[in-house]
Length: 230
Image (cartoon, rainbow, N blue to C red; front, side, top):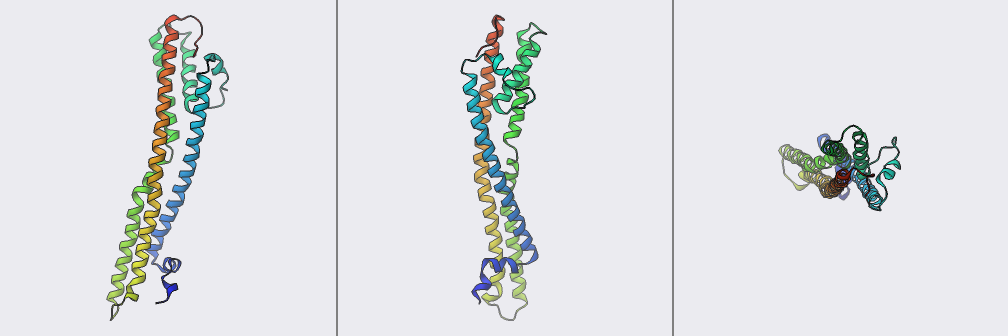
């Protein structure tokens, strides 16, 4: 048997159309999953940095009205800054309209909850695709494997004498499909778990910030004297 005939490139090029389509699908899925991995990793790293910077400003003792004015109204912010912007905007909107602290705090909490939900959508964007690649790729590779094994049996049925040279290419291409399915699935599983965990921890920090900010506004509404201070 020619060594070149059993090389991986040769096996891929000489594989059946169905197996080649399976391999192509797995390669495309793997490439797209790596794009998502790099994109989400960069986005989450940036989100962590933005959170740390805003938290430092928030707890520096700055007047909250001044901090709110520093955020351009036409410049959408993300993370804790977005939650703060939404909550404080609602606070300023309701303050002149009602004397009920409960009504004001409920409105603020509702606005921050909506902002938090949007941040959740932003941080977990495309992670479902990673989960899909992780769960589906092994089965797609297995389909290619089964098809290759079927081809080997068909090849055996058409020969007078069964030899390793007859079935080896079919079995080899089937195993390549399995390997490619695993190569697509394993990184997707690892990074899906990692990125989901990072997003969950960051969302937990956003939620804690919202509760702390809510408590600050609650304390300030008790006296109704002066402007809110951190």
